[in-house]
Structure formats: C-alpha cells, structure tokens
Length: 359
Image 1 (tube, rainbow, N blue to C red):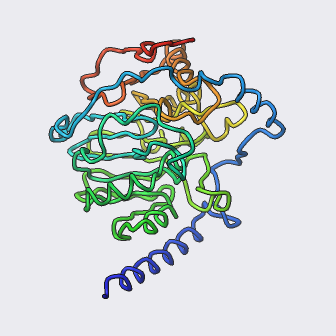
Image 2: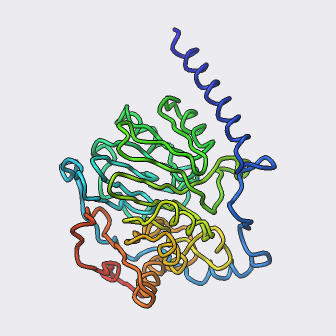
Image 3: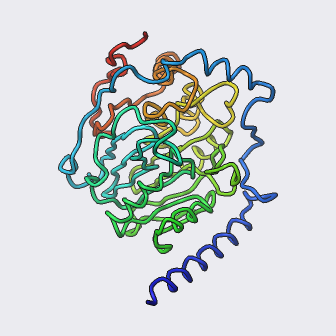
C-alpha cells in the first residue's frame, strides 16, 4: 500500500529539482530553452512556397519498394568489441554503438508511426530490422530531444521493462516525459549543455553539447525542454551524435574542444531551404563533419519516415555527390548492417537497388 505514495513523492521531488535546474540554466531565458544562435523555424513569407513543394514531389517522398536490409536477431551480437567501434543503423536516427566494451542506443524508435497516435501520422517505410525484444544488453540509452521521431513512449516503456537496469541520458526537462510514463527517476540522467556524465563503470564519458533545433510534443509546450547533441569519449575513441538540428558555429568549437572524432552521426533528411536553420541537410552535414574533425560521417534522420518535401533518396544522393566533389569519408550501411570502423565494407549505393528508383 506504500508503493504508490512513495513513488508519487519521488516523482514530485524529481520534478521540483528538474524545474529548478532548467530555470537556472544559462540556456533558458524568457520561459523557454534557447538556441546557441538566433533561430527562426521558417523563412518568413515562404508558406506558399513550402505548400507548392509539398504538392510537387508527391509519391517520390516514399520509396516504391522496401529498402535493402539485413535481418538481425539477438544472436547477431557477440560481446562488444573491446577496442573497435561497431555500429548498426536501425533507421532514421536510431543507432546502436558498441565502443570500448559498452553499448549505447541513440534515439530509439520502434514505433510504426512518428506521431502521438499510431493510427495517423507518418508511417515507417518498413519494420525495423531487429525486434525490440531482441536487442542485446545495453549500457545506456541516449536521447537528443523530445520530438516524436526521436522519443517514442512505447519504445521507451518497453525498453525500460526489458532492460530494467539501463539508464536514460537526456537533455534538461525531457526526463519529465519518462517519469510520467512510469520510468524510475533514479534511471533518468538529465544534462545541460557542456555537462558531463559517464557510464556506470566510467569507461565512457557522455557530454551534452549544443544543438540548433527546437522541442515540444504539442502546440502548447514549444521549447519547454532542451535539445542536445552528444559527445561520447572513451579511452581510445570519440564519437559525436548530432541528433537533430541545423548548422551553427558551435560545430567548430566542439571539434576544437573534443575532436578529432572517429565518427560523427549527422542528420541529412527533412531539409528544405525555408527551414534550413533547424535542419542540416547534406551540404551542411559535410561542413559540420569537417569542422568537427571527424574521420567518418554516418548519415542519419532519413530513409524511414516521410517527414519532408524532398524525394526519399535525395538526401543520400546529394550527400554522396558532395563528398565526392569536396571530400568526406562516408559510412552508408544498409538497415541492420553491422559495421566495424576498423573493417569497413566496400562502398555500396544500395538505395539505387530499390525497385522503381528514379521514377
């Protein structure tokens, strides 16, 4: 009979601490979280142009056939490599990173739709290549912000139940969602920009870094929680997870302070000139890779949901063309393909294999 009152007390205490922390953050002013530089959601006066583009590309925004994928099971994962970083792209911005004996899962989305309701909204192009219940044992889950295509209620609740010891690393304020969904506050680790936490054994440092984006899950909570990118620093390797957001001069600062990186995971999809301040797009992703001083770029935030106005394969096609012209080493794994940085497969433009490509 004591369990629910005790839990309620813990939630109230956690919520009070959270509000105090975010209100004292230098990145929280006028009642909302701020970007590192002044930012607008969309170029003023361009609504008609966006509507025109929405109507123009119609069926091209969704692939005409399933994308090539590698089906996985729990047996696909041996013990994490002690020194060689290994990764799996599950689609959109969901990546499993194995590094220095640890497993981190970024922005996990197993939902069928990127939406508050699973009967409406952008649907997945195809199921994830691995059932959620067959994920290997995780060290931590890392979240960039609270948009539905990066933070899914059912995925988080199921993960928390299946892996009862895994902690969740989040930007300021985002923990309120998890605790509302029944996640123990002791498993919620919130960080402001430039704050550092670590995995349980201290093998990896996790540093929340600035990003240029926005937050909110309804019309009434815009920018009430923070958004972040993440630096993962180990003894021998460093990785950057950009999450979601546009270009800003902070990439060079991050590269100077924490680079060089073995790998940068950067968004390329959902870009458009009229909302270019809040999304990178292929060209700016290559620029960010250079400024971060990252050897490899793994493109994320594409190939899973129709969230933009461009054809589904335009981001990757433009990224590859830009890398060939201006330099930049890319990783372009198929969905579910396990790749190790010390033993990379040959480059394959697998997106051209999709039936009906270019029609």
